[in-house]
Length: 130
Image 1 (cartoon, rainbow, N blue to C red):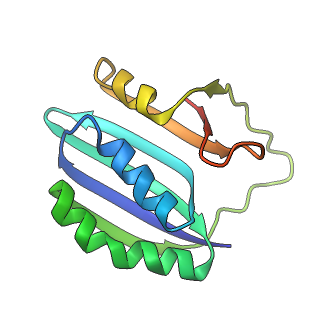
Image 2 (cartoon, helix red, strand yellow):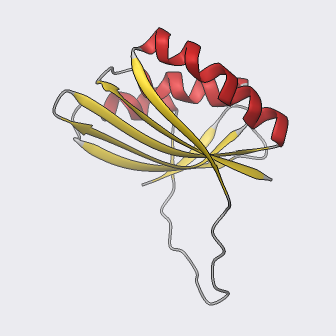
């Protein structure tokens, strides 16, 4: 599995997180890590996108149209996954909900970290951990 890091910067838009998710999902890729910050009137999002080679290439090719449509700047770089030591056991609290609801909650919270986890029994649903 290959990885792509996306850094998205632009004016704050309440639905931008949903647009980013739609872009990644349309390429048949997954978001394995995501940080979204609202700084003043700017939104900064960093994502680790995983998928096969063709899905990531499709995602890279769709970036110029995404930038134009959403008035944002995107930096995309291929990367390798981190190797975790065998004695590391991450602690995660899961919150189940739709991405639309979570992005609406972002209006009240200046920053939030989401780590989406795939749900094997639901195609589009995600589990997010703060």
